[in-house]
Amino acid sequence: MLLSDVFDNTVRKIKTQTANVLTLANLGLGGFAIIVGIQGQLHLSLMLIFIAALADRFDGMAARKLQVESELGKQLDSMSDIISFGVAPALLLYQGILHLFGYPGAFFTILYIGCGAFRLARFNIAENNGYFTGLPITAAGCLLTLSYLAIPFIPAYSFIFIILSLSLLMISTFTLKKV
Image 1 (spheres, rainbow, N blue to C red):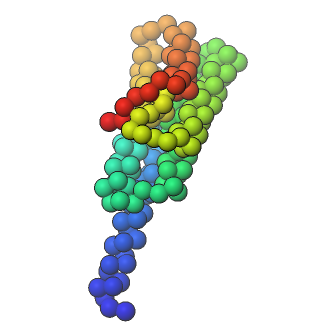
Image 2: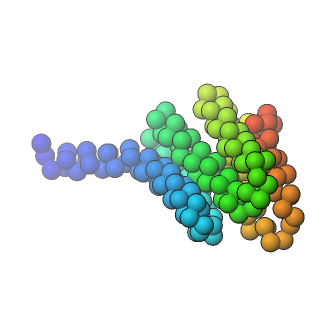
Image 3: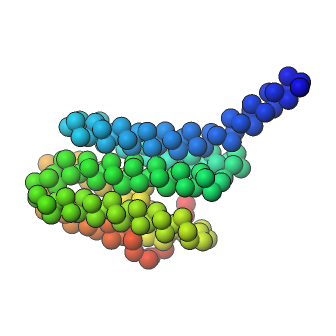
């Protein structure tokens, strides 16, 4: 085997795994956001969720640019998204304010995660003709995370409305053009 063949094989392997590495970075950042959020470091959790959103943005771009889109990558992306934009933002808001509502706060936290999982499952089995059906979980997760910053400024019950609204928007059937 020639050195050029070894080099070509190495480059091909790196190329095919670049998007998956970014997807796993998204997942790792989301997982870390959950851990630090449970430990009470809510501002760090918020920052990690937004960095995960950047990794999520770049993984799809990398897959398309390198022409390495795959069914495995699509599934891995969805599993990462439920962690980074489903569980992590829901727990951030729960730790930040929803815990004050007791079981109803826990219910709406879990409802949001369930709606996010439903939305991702529906996305994975649907024909995607340049449109999203319902609010993408990444957008919902970023909006929910951003709402955390409003805790000192708006009434606590507003967050029940915010998390319920985002949950329903994710499972709704309206369509949005992909950008």
